Structures are given as C-alpha cells and as structure tokens.
Length: 102
Ligand code: SF4
Ligand code: SF4
Image (cartoon, rainbow, N blue to C red):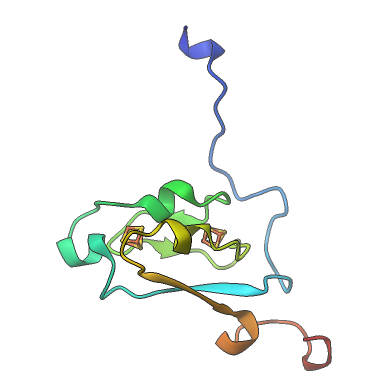
C-alpha cells in the first residue's frame, strides 16, 4: 500500500477552536511524576501522542495549551506515571464562567 492511500489525521487546534468558558475539567501536570521530566529528556510523550486536540507540546514535562484543551482527560488516562490529574475547572479557579452560571 502506498503512502498516498493511507488515511491519516494531522494535528491541529481542533475544530471547536479556543476552549473559552466551556471546559469543565482541567488537566494539572505534576512534573515530579512525569517520566520525561525525571529522565531529563524528551521520552514517553504519550500524553502528547494521545491528545485528540493536539494541544500538548512535547517537553520535559510536556506543556498543555489550556487555550485549546477541551478537558477530555485522555492525557491523564494514558499517562503511565499518573503525572496528569484532572480537576474540576471551578476548583482550579480558571473557569471564565460568571459565578452565577457555574
Ligand atoms: S504521558 Fe505522563 S509521563 Fe509521559 S510525558 Fe506525558 S506527563 Fe510525562
Ligand atoms: S484533557 Fe484532553 S484536550 Fe486537554 S490536554 Fe488532555 S487530552 Fe488534550
């Protein structure tokens, strides 16, 4: 099978664009648990690989672009070191919803 016939998706900032005020969960990175951060090199990167919104940048630890993160929790589920924790957006204090709508 040639390369041209293989169906591939490419990373992008998601069709819904910026998350704005509708994300309900928020990923929190714990670098002290991240395998890449502990190794001091760009290894693992499963969170980057699995993020369906392509809003994680490879690194030590990887960086999550919260402007585009949808709060799906896939990164936290796939992280073998449990270095990403999903917390309710309202508890993290970054939710842009007015108090009355939370
Ligand atoms: S999946 Fe977890 S351990 Fe691996 S790079 Fe991402 S945060 Fe670090
Ligand atoms: S919560 Fe979902 S959208 Fe946000 S960084 Fe993790 S995998 Fe990507």
